[in-house]
Image 1 (cartoon, rainbow, N blue to C red):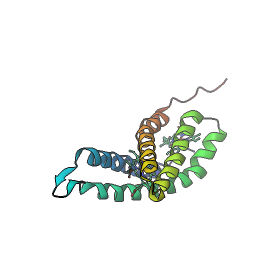
Image 2 (tube, protein in one colour):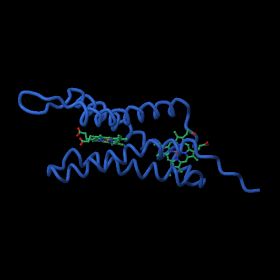
Image 3 (tube, rainbow, N blue to C red):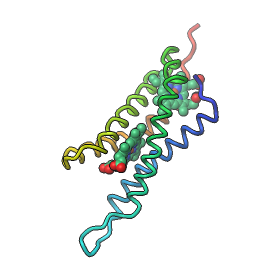
Image 4 (tube, rainbow, N blue to C red):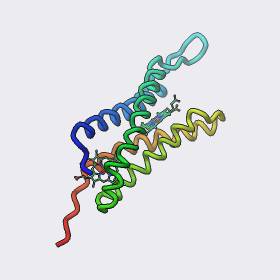
Length: 142
Ligand code: HEM
Ligand code: HEM
């Protein structure tokens, strides 16, 4: 159930790309808008962040499938780190669902709410993941 170092490093690299691209998009979207001849111009960084984010999101979704088989089910059966692991897993499912909807929801107001929910949970997912990663081992019963 413990991840092989190669897999663990790959997973962490993909998660770092996912989180950083989302954060950079937020920075670009809110603070790097420039005035133009026809009104405020979005930063050219924005589409690049979304391209990177989409790639990392696909990688993460694939990893969740692998983790289900080699990590999540075995870890759950052993009753170890259930709380922190369950929270990370639930966040991943909600992020996948809201990310999917972000592609197809057309109504502006609904999309804005969905976007806020998606990235707030996304930002919170990093501390949750770190908490899970370093959660203390449970003492064995005698
Ligand atoms: C209910 C779901 C989960 C359970 C029960 C669970 C359980 C565990 C346990 C018991 C460990 C400690 C491994 C050991 O020291 O032997 C661990 C570590 C870890 N978990 Fe999870 N986990 C879950 C979900 C997840 C998810 C969704 C991710 C990633 C998105 C993840 C990533 C990691 C990583 C990176 C480590 C540290 C590296 C390692 O020890 O292999 N886990 N998990
Ligand atoms: C498994 C996890 C995740 C998946 C599957 C996912 C998927 C997606 C998808 C499909 C989009 C729409 C892209 C587009 O419109 O071109 C999106 C947008 C976004 N995501 Fe994620 N994402 C995940 C995690 C995260 C995390 C951890 C963050 C952290 C900050 C984040 C922040 C954002 C932001 C800021 C946007 C742009 C919102 C908007 O267009 O209004 N996402 N995500």
